[in-house]
Length: 476
Image 1 (cartoon, helix red, strand yellow):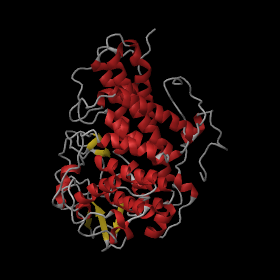
Image 2: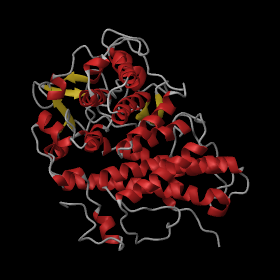
Image 3: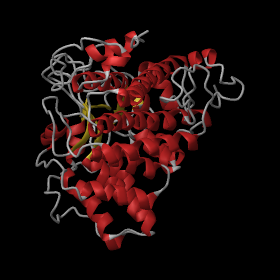
Image 4: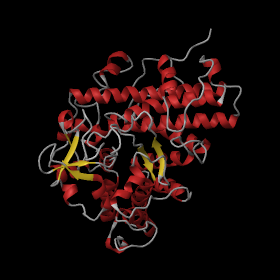
C-alpha cells in the first residue's frame, strides 16, 4: 500500500514560492514511492524545507532576539525581553511557534534525505546534491535550535516514526550539525541554480560560524578563508548612506555580497517583517507592529557611534511617534514603496565572513595579524564610503592593538554591521561576556534563565521521552 506525504508537506510544496523558483506543474503523483524521481518533484520537496524556515524569520523570531540586544529595546509585549529576566508567557508562546516551524522544516528535510536515494530517474550526483541541500538546511536549523534552547530533540531520517525521543546533549547536537554541513560542502554546487538556494560556499560559511561559535578558532578562520579565496564574493560598495539600499533594499534580487539569503516573494509582499522599520514615506510603522523595537538617542551604543559612519545614518531615524522625543527607530530593511516589507533576509553575507575571519584568526594566532586587520578594515572602509580593497584614512592601525583590544574592536564593528539582523544576542552569548555588554549599555543584570528559551509545553506534554522534572530549561 502506498504511503502518502503528510498534508503539511504537500501544502508547503504548493505554497512555497520564491521570486525565481516557481513550480510550473504540480507533480502527477504525490506518493512517497513515486514522488522523488524527477528533478521537478525533488525541487518541490526541497522547497518545502525552505517554507517554514522563511516563516520563522518572517515573523517574531527577529524581534525576540533584537529585544535582548545592547542597542534595541522591546516595546509593548516585547518589553519584558529587555529586562533580561527570561521570557514571559506571551514570548514563551512566540518561541514555541518558532520551535514548531523549525521542526517542521527538519521533518521536511528528513523526508528528502530518506527518500531521494530511492529515486530511480536521478543520477547519483544529482541525488547527492539534493541530499546535501537538505542536510545543509537541517544543519543550519539545528544550529539555531541549539543556541536558543541548548540540547534539543534530534529528529533525523532514522527516527521519523518515533514520537518519544529523549533530549540530546549540546555536544550530540553539534555532532549532527558538523556531519550535515561537511556532507553539504562536499556535494553542493559552486553556484546556486536560482538566487536563494544553498551552495558549497553557503555550507562553508555556516560551518565556519559553527566552528567559531564552539571556540574552534583556527579551523573557523581556515574555513572562512576558503570562502574569501573563492573570489565569488565582494562587499557592495557605497559612497553615501542611501547606497546601502543596494544591499538591503526590497528591489534587490541578489548582490555580490550575498552568500545565503532567505528570498521572499515580491509579488506576494510577505517578506521579512520590519516591526519598527519604515515601510512607506515618510517613515511610518507597520500597522500592528509599531513599537515592537525601538531605541533612544542616549543609548550607549548609538551615542558612542561615529556620526560619519554611513551605517548609522542609513539604519536609524528619529521618531516622535513612539516613545518620546528621544526615540529612534531602525529603518535598515525599509520598503517605502509598499504597504508590506519585501526585503530578503541576509542569513550570511560576505561581511559576516570577513568579521568572523578577523576575530577567529586573532584568537588562534594569539595576537592581531595583518590578514585579520585587513579583513576588518574592508568592512570598516565600506562603512565610511571608501573602496573596501584600498587603504583609506579611516583604517585601523595594527600596531595600536593587542589581542584583547583588537577582539573588542571586531565585536564592536560586528555590532554595527549586523544591527536588526537578529544576530547580536547570539553573538553576545558566544563571547561569554553578554552580562558585561548589557550592564554597560543597558544597566541590566541578565538572569540565568534568560540565556535559553523554554522547551515548549506541547513538546513536554506529548513527548514521553522527556522528563518534565529534569529536561526543562532552568527557570521555566
